[in-house]
Image (tube, rainbow, N blue to C red):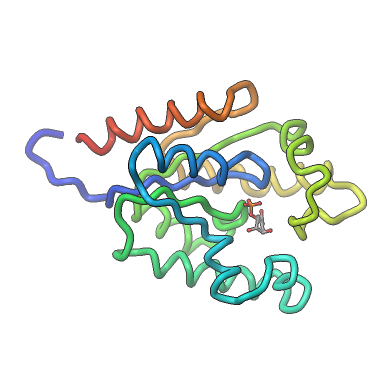
Length: 181
Ligand code: S3P
């Protein structure tokens, strides 16, 4: 708005369930905006020198959530002009919701259970989906998390029928409008 100063830093944050394409889209988007790309999962793996699978297996989900919250907290005030891809469960900690909204414009990449199942099947990197009935697990987690994604996001994008390029283009144009305010 004319005459007002932008309150939120110039970052684009991607949230959403496992398998919706956050990392892939973050890379294309960062190129098109000329931003850096950050990935909270990768940052955790680097800081721990072990994979997310190993962290879950050895320390459990709660420890992973703690690490995720610390990584996010460290981004506050230290990041500008970045596309930040986040882990699908980052919104499950209340404290993270405020933090995410304070560091940039938040896009929720939404997808239905069938697309998610399609995209995660055959991938062994997601400890929470190593279960007898991944469809049920996804549905349970989605019903718990959808209200949280909703609360956290500035924009929601239904990705099911869109290509990676279409999604990236839509986000880039929306972000440019936001950043020009
Ligand atoms: C998780 C999502 C994963 C990763 C971890 C837990 C979740 O990230 O953070 O396996 O709770 O949904 P992606 O969403 O990038 O797969």
